[in-house]
Image (cartoon, rainbow, N blue to C red):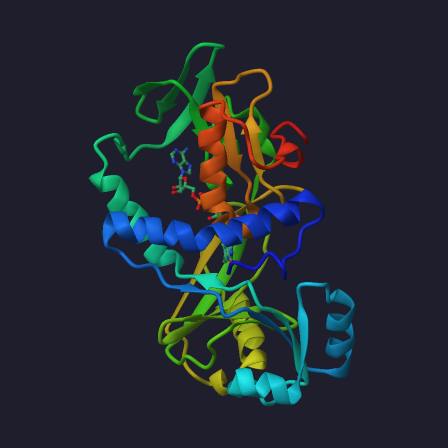
Length: 309
Ligand SMILES: Cc1cc2nc3c(=O)[nH]c(=O)nc-3n(C[C@H](O)[C@H](O)[C@H](O)COP(=O)(O)OP(=O)(O)OC[C@H]3O[C@@H](n4cnc5c(N)ncnc54)[C@H](O)[C@@H]3O)c2cc1C
């Protein structure tokens, strides 16, 4: 999901989320021009669906200037599968992207680039001085670099020398997909969400602190199915197409560690994006480039200082 209006952060973090969302169309076009891979981007908006009078009240309280309340008739017009709902809060500029196609496009792009060498290795340590930086992998190989970007997701804190990344912890999320495609919009319900993906739909997700265990559980999958099927009852009883889980890199304030190590300017942190790493990825990449090339930043990133914990 690309949903900064729904998963709303405070202050400049909200501005960053909105800028990241609005960066997507040009980014997708740029990738497609270079790779021939088209990445489906859905900007039809996100609907937060009210399924009870208490839900109507709660959503009313979270409305803000960018959102619009849709009554039952308006909602059914927009999304016929929601005829059981009492209304919805509509965030018209949010949406979702097909992250699997996106990763495929990036894979194609990088495999074509003569300037990128990819190494399948696990970095165990990084080090840096004022003038140089380097990484060591689990086989003992050494990689010298102008800069190091710490971007190892939930595992960032395991890398020796990435001292601020200790604040990043893994939080598991389980997901289920269905062969049916009951909705065109990204939908949030009281307990989870439903994302349209081509001819299918994905329901999510749990937030579980279970270390680095990345498997699914019967209880987690049951909870995700309940969350998705209460949003679209038409899915009830449909056998899931697939179930899987991932680990989010989560920080205590759910905001990324994004910036240069204040003492070692050759180490840049771009990790801890928590629940919004897909949303923030293209803008994070822009910011990392600007930091490395010491360009003037267009956005205030002081809220994400890597040493704030
Ligand atoms: C269930 C679920 C639902 C989500 N939904 C959304 C959503 O709707 N919208 C959104 O914006 N975000 C969402 N997220 C969050 C998003 O997926 C993450 O924030 C994002 O993937 C973080 O990107 P990353 O590149 O920092 O880490 P990752 O995507 O985890 O990538 C880290 C990479 O580093 C590699 N790595 C790890 N350790 C090492 C090492 N020592 N050496 C070398 N390589 C290493 C890993 O193999 C991996 O390839 C969701 C996450 C989950 C789990």
